[in-house]
Amino acid sequence: MAERLAPSQKHTFTHNGRTVYEWDQTLTEVNMYVPVPPDMRAKEIFCDISKQHLKFGRQDNPPFLDMDLFKAVKVSDCIWTLGGHKQRCVPARQQQQQQQQQQEQQQRQQQQRRHQQHQ
Image (cartoon, rainbow, N blue to C red; front, side):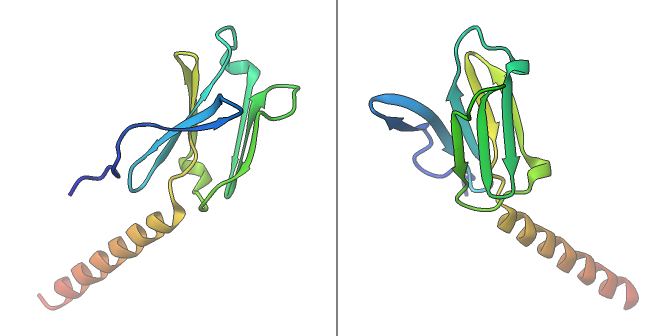
């Protein structure tokens, strides 16, 4: 089964004919792409990702993006990078899916312990 959701191309959010950001996603991850001016450097950017909120913009200015996320994320798994005049922000590793994976792993470990006890 493919991990990527259909359709696999980037989606675009526009406002007044201007691209605000683009995104693509898999079952466990969302990538956001925000156009930035060609002369902007990484140290000029702030990108604050909290459990259910994202703020992004140029240092010492009001945020360009200030939005709630659709689902809670695990902040320690979130990253952002700058390249090709687009800032890439990965804010949406869904916490719910991570919790499910942890529960599945715990179940496997319990089964292994039971198996070892019976040997």
